[in-house]
Image (tube, rainbow, N blue to C red; front, side):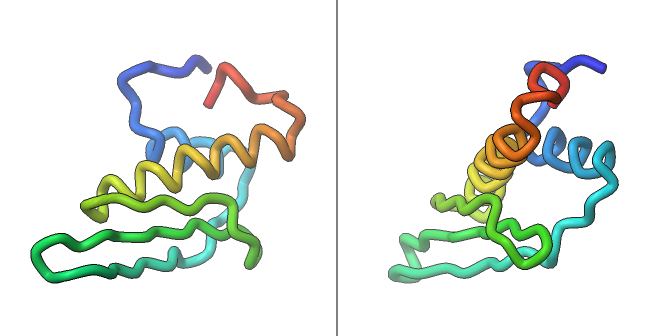
Length: 86
């Protein structure tokens, strides 16, 4: 398995979870700010523990940021054993 630089963090996170046979909890999504300038926050949890929190001007941007952070947390948890794959 090798990482494709064109993959999104969300796709890599999903692949990582499938490989490890873990199922993320239902994500938490919220938004704040004026209607013309909303800021979205997206939290990824596994087993009730937050692994990634992302914010952005769109849900997609917030999801991508949260997934990138969650991947990094998983790498730390597994001592980098899967770095280069996901």
